[in-house]
Structures are given as C-alpha cells and as structure tokens.
Image 1 (cartoon, helix red, strand yellow):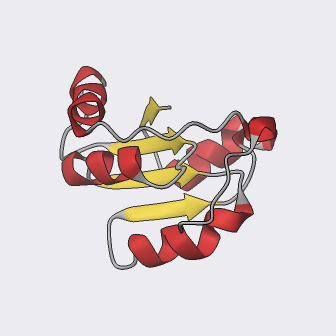
Image 2 (cartoon, helix red, strand yellow; image 1 turned 135 degrees about the vertical axis):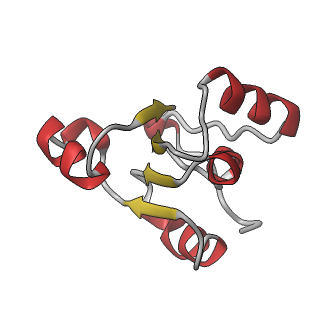
Image 3 (cartoon, one colour; image 1 turned 30 degrees about the horizontal axis):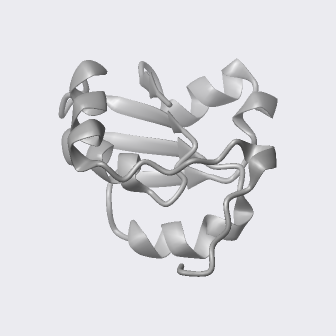
Length: 106
C-alpha cells in the first residue's frame, strides 16, 4: 500500500497514533456487545481498534481503491465493508445492514 495517495475530494486523512485511536474507542463507549458503524475506514487503523472492542464493525468506505487492501487485512475478522458513499445510503438501508441498534463512529 506504499503507493497510496490521499484524495482531497474524499477529505482523507489517516490516523496512526494508537493512543488516540484507543481514546476514540473508549470515548465512544464501544463494548463487546456493540455493532459499530464506522464512516471512512481509510487504511483501517480505527477499524482495527474498533474491532478489538466491538462485537461487529461495519465500515463504509467511499474509496474503492482500498477494497483489496482492506478486505485482505480484515479477512476472517468481525469487520464488514460497504464500499459506498454513506451520504447516499438511506437510513433504512443502514438499519437493515446493522440489523438493529448500533453505535456510529467516524
């Protein structure tokens, strides 16, 4: 993934500070019983932190160039990806995908 370039049109910036990532998960109150919807997986740093605490993580990612990287990185985990612009997804579809209550982290 070394040749990846940020895309301004998607407002991409990737978090890497593990302490900050853990703090986000803690502040969101994510527990092992939670389904979490993440907006913007990026390279998966927050996704990984969420997956360690949540029962299930559903991450919306607009950048289809990250498909191979993310699906390989999280193969066999509790993480699912939806490669769509979440702004174009109805509330009904999000509720259907989540299958009930969820926490939103972005």
